[in-house]
Image (cartoon, rainbow, N blue to C red; front, side, top):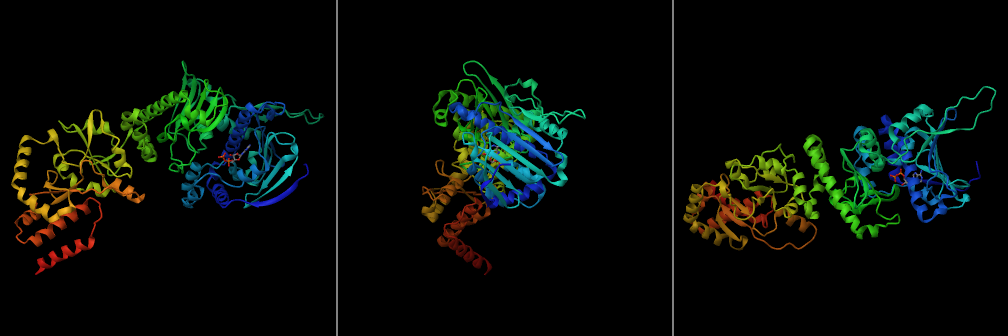
Length: 634
Ligand code: ADP
């Protein structure tokens, strides 16, 4: 061992300590994955070197074959991984192996429950990487040197995973990283050639560079110990370049875990080779679970980009629209230049056409999943439905396709579950129904019981119930589906078209005529509070309701804008009343103008409450109501 200088002891960032503690306990049943994680890092390090060496060939330092070596020592109970990739400088080691750079980590840690089973899923989502070494080791030594630095600028990192680590500067002749795991005494089974070989075959066969193990050679008794011979144990070819028919599902799954840093299998994948004007391979995956930072703006997204098998860029975002940011995968292009940059990608017309082709692939894959695996699609929708709802606004060209993938709660679906597709809705629509009806609101309970649905219940017409925060905004981008237009049942003058018989319409007109006097009286009583007063066709049980003007913002949008501190344009609702309701009949017969006014205001306020809105002047409401209650009880 060479001399160590500038030795210091540093503490792990709090989040690392939490992660280490949790991981050791919750991943115990799946401990062999430590090797997959470390090999995955080594492979990334080689990819990075290969890429940097394109512009700085001297980084290759003579150019030995790029590879990963795994060895073990049964007596010392160690497993050693060595790569000749990009390596790390002293600063790199301190930041990369002492902190977690992912944004939102502290937030994520707060969500952990302490329940090991649940947390092990969460931790899988988070990705544990290097730190998984401590599942099997009670001490880890890392020796590394960054490519391009002098041999004297090597670094030794060492830790027992208990809160601190040591770093020292050392001499390291060869570039790259060597990690020595000192196995816990209960884990010495891993210091075994067969065991290691099996784990590598199982999890890392898809790694595109050779992973070597020492060949088992038995020396003749009187001979000296022979020099180690190495043999490659994995297939060592880029998985996405192989023909689809030759790649097993398990290989696709393990490859996904490598590129996505996920612990779980993906829901689905799509592997394609495109030839012709543009040539590229793509392999796209739908994860089973949303990453913890799906809604964080700066969270990493995008595909891994290769150009003619050479890794060029992680998180290349230009290949898919934002609403498909959860898709993981690889693109390998034959047309792009090896020194392509993010800025170039954003402007290159080649990328535009790849983007639209890849987007279509993803949407097709989701369509297929929905059709063939409806249960899995339900899970997909729970995880990613909210993000898919950003689609129609962002991707005009695919609006109809995205709309087909949307799922909603409805008056006829499973209680509160977003499972009804638009196709399903239309398939069971009423004879003569040429509209898709929906209602938006704050909560499922509120919309489900909304008076706006009364006439729909009576006629047995299905209404979609939309309660996600972005729903009203989403609907402003959807005007129709399959030739049928969307109608917000709380908006404007509800026209049921062919669903109302001629007699119904005639009768409604007559009632409206006979109530013209009452309409005027209420208008005077409510004054500036309303934009219009009219007889309702929507109600069977409730006395009154508020409708939104055709062009006005709905409640949800208003609340979102208000919450973000924006000025919301003033709009007044339309007051509709149900002339058959006993309260309205009473109102109609009321002689005292004062009491008429009080009752009108109470009905207005109640209608606002039923719509989930808050009252402008709650004290006035209580005062009026109490006044009536007192009059009632005398
Ligand atoms: P992740 O791989 O998700 O970024 P890890 O905790 O596994 O997280 O690794 C942290 C960082 O440490 C990596 O991003 C990389 O920069 C560095 N690293 C880990 N292993 C190696 C290695 N074998 N060679 C070079 N750098 C490495």
